[in-house]
Length: 174
Image 1 (cartoon, rainbow, N blue to C red):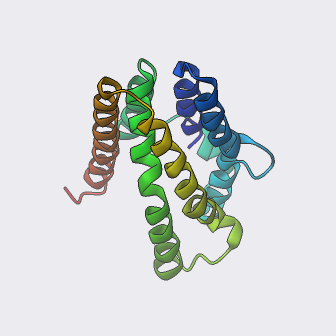
Image 2 (image 1 turned 135 degrees about the horizontal axis):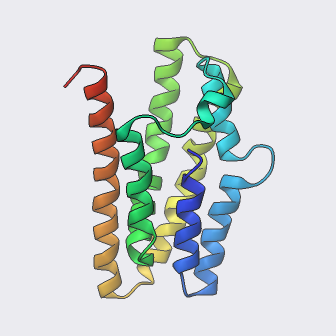
């Protein structure tokens, strides 16, 4: 989770229009500002699962995780429109996924502690606004750039699916 704000930073840095950069900066600000920053909320979630902060901060030990993190960096670094597409695909699914995670954590793991669930509570709402803002940015792009957005919006979820396939494989489900 600590890498996600850096993805936004790369997209922000690649953007040539100041008004659009300000929108991305607001998203990045939401991710990293204050004591309730999103990496901190993720650490609280991990603690709610019984995982220490130190363990949560260790470099990825699983190839599937490394491939996901590095794959997103490779995707967002070189091209603003591709990065924007990947960001859109990620942010677009997050509210629904967050709601599902909250329900599943409560039902199947009896996790009720707000500090453990806060990461998902925040993302359930904040990423609806982030998605709407990103759609506005995409609409301002020319036709060529919008094709690049589609490329990013396709490759981003593929990275996530490969990660999830890796987790399923490690757990012996595939």
